[in-house]
Amino acid sequence: MSGQRLTILGATGSIGSSTLDVIAQHPQRFELFAVTAHSNVTAMEAICQRFTPSYAVMVDEQAATRLREALADKPQITVLAGAQALLEVSAASEVDQVMAAIVGAAGLAPTLAAVKAGKRVLLANKEALVMSGQLFMDAVQHYGAELLPVDSEHNAIFQCLTTHAQTTLGQVDLEAEGISKILLTGSGGPFLNLPVNELNQQTPAAACKHPNWSMGQKISVDSATMLNKGLEYIEARWLFNCRREQLDIVIHPQSVIHSMVQYSDGSVLAQLGQPDMKTPIAHCMHYPHRRSSGVKALDFTQLGALTFVAVDEQRYPCLRLAQQACWQGQAATTALNATNEIAVENFLAERIQFGQISEVCDRVLQQLQMPALGSIDDVVAFDKKVRRVASECVEALT
Ligand code: NDP
Ligand code: MG
Image (tube, rainbow, N blue to C red; front, side, top):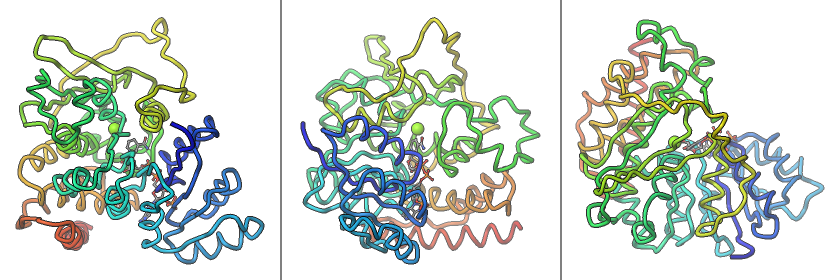
């Protein structure tokens, strides 16, 4: 594998910058074709000065104008504006790999554009898969895209699968592979040991202070509610073609084991590593080879105990909602994802309290009629509708 050209969707974010760090370590192997962001001009300018990609996309038009001015001394870089340009740099014929690292539903269309162009798609943007499930996996198969999971748990599971199972992602027959269970691990987030009656007073800053991982704000709040684990449960269902009884979650506060696969002979395979996303990112970028990610190996003499506990459902009502929605049908997971995005946005803006995130999700899911979603257009239209209902629900609470 030589000279792989990459587009990074969401280059200014946490996953985006870890991806850039991996590229910087292997300048002969990877070439940056395009980087995209929403509106962070300062971060985008720094990326462009450091890497000189061919294209830089800002979804926000004014941000694009400012970036063009800032890059006046770099005529090699074409600055594009608007959401349509995301699709173009995802599907461009020059591109080999697309890192899908936009946060939230905004990532669906450009990630699908990469899928439809048959690219190697490195999937961090779990919301895209949660909101479109089977439709997304069908598109991967239909267009011959190569989907590789970046999310650390799913990357860990992927690493614990046989080569045959890896190449049939989405259609894998777990039983035929001798797999009895997929075990997702989760740290429990920053509020694992807080008395349950103190959860509601927690501020956005406290919710974003994850004990083990450094991540964007939205996923950090999702980790505190454990809705992140719920989204990952749904993500795992689609990636590994699981039935309900084949998928479980266990709390592992140290985040050393990133997930496990239990085989029918009693063996359990686990993937271990530092809580640093450069490991799964580099794994996907170099796959099927193994090369340096820049992450230090674990020092087992310094690790201490690895512990595991069952999930406390009372503490994490969002997780239960996600597990229910997962087996209820596509519309339920689309609705949960959209409602959660609205609720988290309002929690971060200090308009609702921490405990109201689950309350909004619960109310909206109960209130909605769940239609059949037969196409991506149906998904997008339903997502829009749910956002309106969720915003009204937030208004009613505030
Ligand atoms: P960040 O918030 O750090 O970054 C988000 C990126 O998306 C930024 O580049 C941002 O641009 C861009 N963006 C935001 N809104 C839009 C929009 N409407 N249209 C286009 N681009 C947009 O997020 P993370 O890097 O933490 O997470 C990215 C994805 O990866 C999420 O889906 C998350 O669940 C997943 N993930 C993240 C992990 C992590 O460790 N961070 C681990 C596993 C999965 P701008 O800077 O201009 O706002
Ligand atoms: Mg994860």
